Length: 529
Image (cartoon, rainbow, N blue to C red; front, side, top):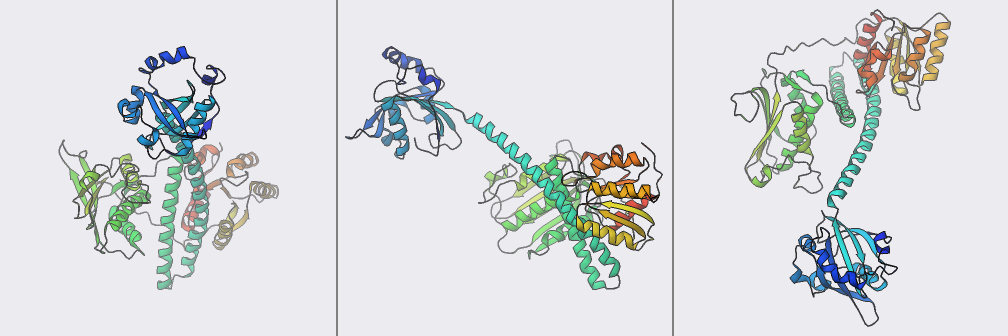
């Protein structure tokens, strides 16, 4: 009975019922064997074996009950009369000393440990001495309770990670706002340099991809759904695949028809699905053979089909690698199933979870030694009309009026001051709620109120837009306030009008989005709440 580390406890009250030595009276010992036959706990009675110096070095099994036989997977006939070192050659001296101390001193102990070489099973052990030089251990299987405790601990850890991830994603969205905004300004000043403009556009694409990923992190950490809508798939898949392979050096072949149907997806989740499949394919290929990605329209007919009847965009990812063993095919989408070292086995499980959430599907075909093909089915909307709204032009007419911006990110304050000043606005900036209220009161008292205020929702230490909008509305009930935040799923963002705001500016944003929101707000008619 070797295994692992354990924590010894003080003698339990059960020991006290047996007197100061923890030993049973002889009359109780006579009936002990009969009593143990029907116990659910494992019962083992042993005698300690000492050397010439009186120090324990082994113990001999005297009796076991059926419950212990079942737990250990060994019969009483194979145990009784044998020593621990004969039956379990790897028995640690530590445990012989523990049980020897119980037998020699009569002091009972309680602890938890793994037994029988099974890492998935934990037992609560109560050891006491029924007679001189003997000890009894009672084993209670607490595996389910330990698993429940472990799951609860994992849940607490996941919630803590969620809070951490949410904060990191919010901070990253703040940084991205400065990046995207300044990229937009660069495009304004580099219109005539096509080469540099091309580089800047690639930087903008990468920044927008980062925006999608941070929004995914926020959605997962806060347990909210992604924004799914019918999207034009042909260019989206091309852009996504191109981004995934950029800088990898891997070979791939992509086939996407121009008439590919729109599909109901979240752009960020589509990236995650394709990235997971392409990464798996890349790991399976050792000879640089190209990974093949094919997108096509697919309609499912028939009641017995594996998929519900309907229209789908089917995307297949094929490799010419080692393939998947037949015995693994049924398990590859199970959480934590992996055949690779240093991997968690979550990639395909998460992929399947994403698709299951909105009636998508994933299938795999593979022959060991001949590669594998994964098929992803995305619910399609063939009749959806894709209307491309022209983006706000960088050089469209600016505006006029006074704007107050409160944001704790210096890069955003500089961007606002620089850009809005260039297009005709009079801008004041500050970094917390106290300063914002001071600017606001002074402007109203001077008869030069702000036409629009842009308030960061959360400020470290308090005093963000959430807190000060009500104070501003007490001064001027018609205040036109825009709430800005990287927390895309915050209740204030989702129901901003009820909290006194007239528009939302989600971080990260570029100057086109900023200009559009400002134009909509300044041309709207404010209704007092």
